[in-house]
Length: 291
Image (cartoon, rainbow, N blue to C red; front, side, top):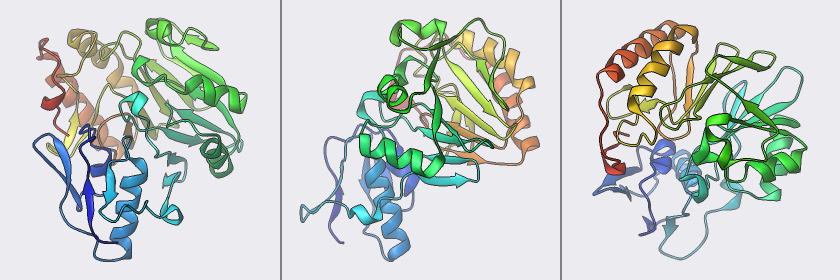
């Protein structure tokens, strides 16, 4: 299908570029189609980008909608994790994930856009969802609807409780809390007062907006220019928590994903902790994020 383009609703959330970095790039603070797909594999990647885009900005000049048969979501990332796609404009386009558990059930980390059809599709792919884990206040949209649809427990930290006052489980303090076999919540105040990182099976790190993989720097980074609560608190949180974490996958809300050997991730997280310790507050500037 030729004639793809990005319309002017693009918010530069980076989601499309994560799924099709060879086809979509960034120019003047928004995504741009570099070229049309050349083969079926590239067409599938571009469709993934289109179905993930929160503003549905990846379009065709003909006006035809992307082919529903090429909607890949939920998309398997690893044996235990699927990415939901269908990112929501009400969470600033945050990624959401499904974590499969050995019991045959699943947990949802943050939420995609709400749709009953999508909710049923996710459960069919991952298993009955028992818990919806919110990483922080920016991502609470649709949490209650997904939790109610599944009969699941909705989790949030007390620091961000005002954003989801009807949560079923409230994390408190800064010490780790086991919320299920192999799944531990690590409070990480900084990006927001109630930011939480969820660690699963010493393999998967759902980092919310606390840190992410940057394609620009080829490393773990914090969104220093989009820290709503305190960059100093984020530095202290990383210093307190980094040594407790062991994982292979970093799976953020915003920013890219990456899998590396656990020892490599541990080294990079220590180095990120040291870099963050040197940062000082700066004005909020979305355009300064190094995707």
